[in-house]
Length: 423
View 1 (cartoon, rainbow, N blue to C red):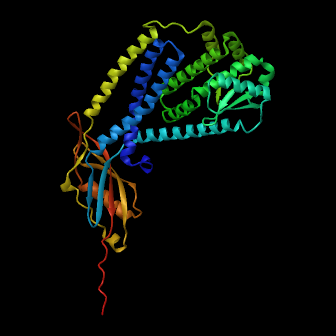
View 2: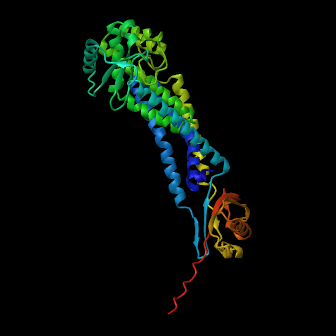
View 3: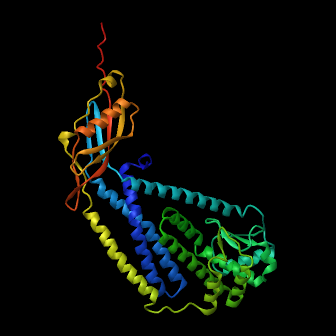
């Protein structure tokens, strides 16, 4: 199955990478869970969560490269002759094939969703928008200078949204709902626009791309979604702090946020109503709680971190003593005889066989995985490999174990000698 999409060894390494990230992701999430209570500000918590997500993105890449480098040194049989060519390579277990296919399906589905959401978000500035009146546009530009946002920003009024949002990465656009002009005071609206400008100043639109990419590729791990959620929560807290600092009135800003609650709708981009409004308001009014040096959550995180470290060490130990690579007994790997009927019919082709090697080194199964197009060649290859080929079996912890491989047999007829031209 996956052999049609990847080379066989790559599919196996990819499956192992996905499995290894299960404990790697938990380890990184546990570390973040331990660190967060010790961080005193939203910026520090956001940066720690973002760094953790970047490590989560890099861990599978490092694991895959490590596995690939280790396997590239393993012995592969390659034998060339006039009549046939033989090749064998390790393959993933059937369960690993299904795991990789499930992962590919999830990545495809989430990619379609992300592209669809991005398309809808970027269409907001092209439909149902109008240029703000001169006085509002001037206020927006003054707010932009107040926050020292140097990037060119467009401001538009939109009838299709109910809360201010920022869309776009290279050329950001802040959309202001038309309803906000009547429902909010100018000072409250300015406070919310400051929140959106803070997103642009912090390059949160770029961070959004990273979040979407990591969530798409590593969707199967709950720890990834938890870390991503922490980033979004602290991102809104950081923008709240910058908006309050710029407008100078926390109560005014809280009133503006509370007014949005009655209009709240699922916004496809960065919006001022993101995160838990109740939590954000309580944080702004009461101030961030001082974390104890060793809180209960920190102690829990440390205990979990220690447990996962031990588990990771145990998981790495079998890898060192994992099943050794099979080694062909070259004397038995002779070329399959070319069927006489196939020679007469000038049949050629490559047969890919799925082979199971028992603990005794004998072939217990040799079935056609990918036919050559000529049944006689397929039968000849599978029967000969099963009857004649032998391997030194793979071992695990000093004991011989069964293993799977795939064998490619290429039947190619010798070219006929050219007949000298008669004088």
